[in-house]
Amino acid sequence: MVGGVTDRGTARMSPRPVIIDCDPGQDDAVALVMALARPDAIEVLAVTAVGGNVPLRLTERNARRVVELCGRPDLPVHAGCAAPLIVPLETAEYVHGETGLDGSGLPDPERPLTSGHAVDAMIDLIEARPEGAVTLVATGPLTNVALAFAKAPAVMRRLERIVLMGGALELGNVTPAAEFNVYVDPHAARMVFQGGVPITMFGLDVTHKVLVTDARLRRVREAGTGAAAAIHGMMEFAARYDRERYSAEGGPLHDPCTIAWLLQPDLFRGRECRVEIETDSPLTRGMTVVDWLGRAPEKNAAVMRDADADGFFDLLDDCLKRLG
Ligand code: BDR
Ligand code: CA
Image (cartoon, rainbow, N blue to C red):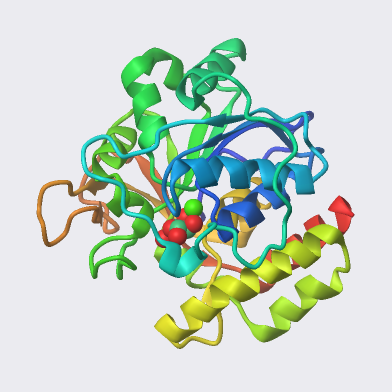
């Protein structure tokens, strides 16, 4: 297997400007915490919320709870789309609990939502920076991102890259063929994969190699900080469902792989591929059809497939300790 992506070996002089579009969700929350723990490497410009794991009124609230946990009440949090482009929203309380952040013990947010729709905020932030400056991380259904492509395609093509959690080469988690984020809004996913912006895709193949074992869970708690206690509670909650379902030594940690890759790309291995999205078939709706063997000359995504899980948890430990 060849190395993942070749364009990020050089050290950056200043933090990478990033927008995080998410549907928190315990694992989205871990991704946010990791990003906000590393202002030396990542400048989070805004958090935008989308309906997904739970309805939008909860995902935007959860995003505010997490940024406050991280001591960043100043950070803009915008609400975006409540429902997918075409199909009705299907949520996942069976994984994440009724609030989406069950297990966190986090209080209600104090600060209000930032005014302005997530899609407009995304477009304005990208437009305000030089071409190729902003990276978009997407860890929920791709509805907001697709709508931004529909509204301002030329602005979206100024993105450096989209780093997303979604899809699977092999086994789906909602149906045998499809992973949750792509299944929930397959039409949006197709627009994003055809949008002309380089993508780094973290599908289930790689996230199921980053397992929350008992020993790793203990280590999170032992980091001993407020953020660590909340993350421990959330991971423990999510692990209940995952262990029952997958009977693995621990549940997968999906969304934080995106941020870990920005911080330490050598933790992951993958390959440039062509990825197309199935939208029509009732049997395989939301399937990411990955041309792993390279038949198609035009690639649109670096598809990650392998991870250094111990290295990932070292990085998480470091982030939790930095956050204090
Ligand atoms: C994805 O779906 C959600 O349950 C998680 O937050 C993650 O983004 C995994 O399929
Ligand atoms: Ca998510």
